[in-house]
Amino acid sequence: QVQLVESGGGLVQAGGSLRLSCAVSGSIFSINGMGWYRQAPGKQRELVAFSPSGGAINYANSVKGRFTISGDNAKNTVYLQMNSLKPEDTAVYYCNALIMFTASGVSYSRWGQGTQDTVAS
Image (cartoon, rainbow, N blue to C red; front, side):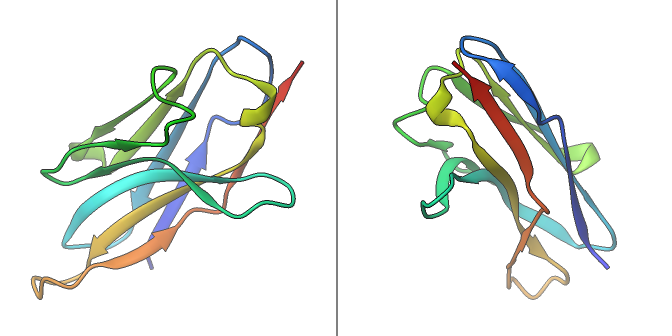
């Protein structure tokens, strides 16, 4: 059974930094992309950053220049470095991965459990 295990969230003061990690565990064939979404109270889930395999990274305009997504392919892990955090960055952050379980070419979207990040003003 495949799991996406997130870590690194928490409480930080405005202007501070947090680093999120997400590791894919279980039997897979390959990963076609990994990224992060977030959902603030009363709002829809939105893209934060996504890194497709072999493609250009996509960042939400609201985080460009402050957040950086990176990965370790050998560990099936993606990171999100968040700097200059603002209170409006407060949300539950979800890891997402596009996973291939066989060589069929079909990818399946899988989600982590979410991690609460709170930025105090």
